[in-house]
Image (tube, rainbow, N blue to C red):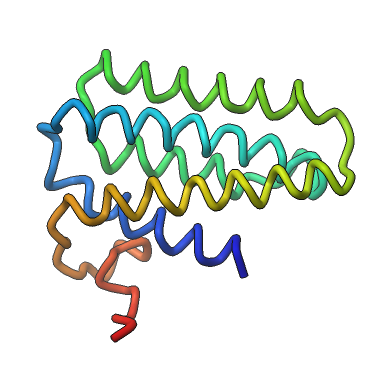
Length: 141
């Protein structure tokens, strides 16, 4: 459930990002923090689900595609993802209760970051070719 909630919130923020390429400093920092969290989550998920699991890495790829950041910021995003991945892998060498707890904490942190980003960006129009579109997420009112 927590993974699904995090995925929905992250997808919502990623789909909205295309309209906000010019970002304020706080939004850029949130994106960097989200990239780190995605990397950490990727390492922790792979630890228990196997190295072929690419769930969070694919979300990071989507982030860089949608964000369309300038070359320097794109490099920073990728570096933060890799740093988060290394941190997650280094701190938890085995899949156990503590690594699963860390994965849940990382997912919660990602939820918070994605929610903050999604609140500062206008929604995009639905497109048939974009399954990650925020318009594909049903309103929860």
